Length: 203
Image (cartoon, rainbow, N blue to C red):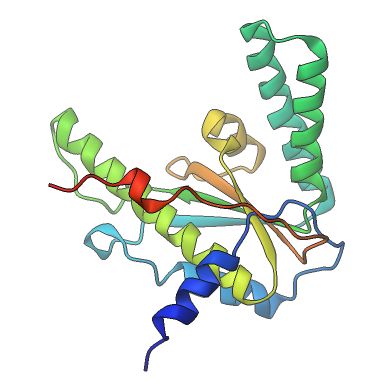
């Protein structure tokens, strides 16, 4: 059992964050494969702190996109951004969220993590839960690519977790970390990476 390293590297290099999709529904069997892949990610203490919210209904996506857009607008107005830029950003955000065939909100909970009385260790435990959830998201992105799907991780829920929680009626301990838009690609995208040598220190 195993994958040839060169085949794996070729696969890694082929994956892209895609934001434009065909309006084809995602079969339930495909969605189940994405979720199964996510749950086999490494996690701190094997506590599996990730939680997923599947958002497929058009009206729900649009309501969420409008609510998040309103927060984005308020933040940009507070920054003093010019109105044309605000309109462009809010419109782009609404389009990406509302037109994706499927949204998967990635949340994390610390309910099953170790509890500490001091802020330092409690903060570390929370970071471990965040890291674990991110790895589950990476598994999901890779599985989506292997199934011929396009996907893109959106960090916007981090900027308005209270709003997202209220809009989706989430349990109080489910903390939004990111959202993955998923669909069959409506185009291709090419983008390189910086050489790893520019990101490494040898000691």
